[in-house]
Length: 462
Ligand code: PMP
Image (cartoon, rainbow, N blue to C red; front, top):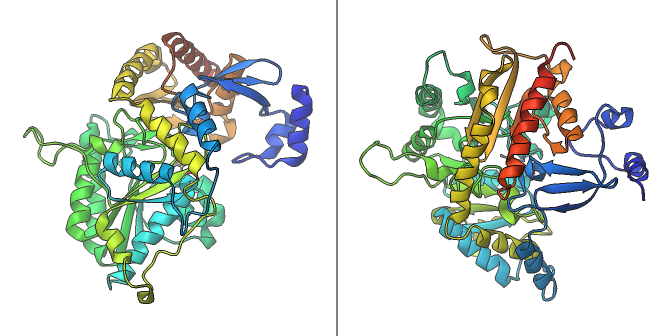
């Protein structure tokens, strides 16, 4: 089968995600037929190799087809493939629930099968909790502008960017939006922390006025990924946890993209500084709900979970006749193959060795991209752990963005592909979010192509 035949068959029958299919048919955006993958590399039907700088939509942690993950999957296939998870349980799901609870400090694990469905379940659980405890007025959600939580209607409703949301607005719940702490928007001379605290004061006000009708606030801890890899100071998490406790509002941490070591700690929530600095107190916050997916299986199989606190679980626990149960399900909930693979992925973190190696690799990526920090069309290079993002602009002083119609990111994408790197942009933002197993040589290649791609994309008129 040639590359072209497969692409033609795909164009004839497949509707690809998050894509204007005309781009593919017209040749504006190449559709690539992948036949195999190994480590950080993908290989197309013509034998060309691509370094997977975006970890296959932020899922892949250990490279493709890591031998431990492949072995765990094959073993599990020999005993149990799938079973209905209502009325039945199994070892891989129980072990995974135990380990995720231990790592997160949360108490109960509810399985779903993709990120959006985990967000849906968390929103429904929060709303239902308040019904069950006799506070039905608490039914509103608060989200941050520029946040992203998925594409199903509930998850889409609590997301900010108009590109994904506007068309469906008549169908959506109407949350209250608080301004994002996104530090790209900080004033001249303002520190990340000051800007973040200032953004938080708006949320504080909103809670003061509306807590009686608010069920939960949902956030992406530290990095608003789909919103352009916009980052903020971890003090926001500390202040938010305090405020949620004070006002009696649930905190939903959507760690779907940032969990599993991506930001430098196992969960991003762990980076919240203690409420009073410098007193030797342990940092980190525990949300009321945590949503996880993407990296949970190391990028091998679809799986997601919502972790919740015990008192939330207890509000649903009653005699059947009380009608308090959470009657929510998905057919592939708790799939044993996916759970087994997730356990194999957790084991690869070792005793923190992978996180330590990540921190070194993050420093390396930062150093290798130093030339971009003085580039005439780069307003900011920002980094949180293994996420490094470059904001391309027309003019750096005024941070004037390139018009979306110029599709500068796409120019960079095409250039990177020609050099054998997958650098899928978010508008004018290019980013690296690679698997954790990059070699130094691969990291150098990635950074070199990123720098070149910025040059090519920002050169004159498109
Ligand atoms: N939340 C966040 C923070 C995400 O980044 C994503 C996916 N990009 C989702 C939720 C939705 O996950 P899924 O695509 O698996 O539905």
